[in-house]
Amino acid sequence: MVLMANGQVYIGKLEGLGSQFPVLTDVFYFQNQLDPQTKEPRAILVKRGREWHAPDRTILNGQQISVIEPITPDSALAKRLAEMK
Image 1: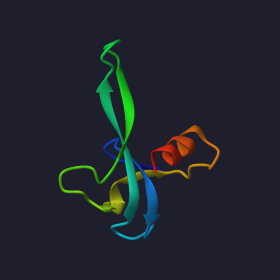
Image 2: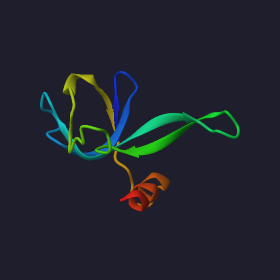
Image 3: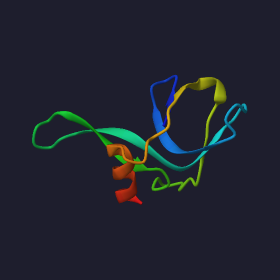
């Protein structure tokens, strides 16, 4: 999981850590939506690549990365990612 300086969170396979432009593949990100019933905001997990330009990777500015954390295989997030694949 990669947290960018602007607050955006990306999840994926990170290559080139320490380089100027690391690359994420198999990318997911969080998107805020309003729950139609409760009108409360909620974060949903979105698979990158379903956008109109269908990107197959995300190239990051290495200077804008704030935090990188691994996702443990038995975490709730890892289980959700497995369901989405």
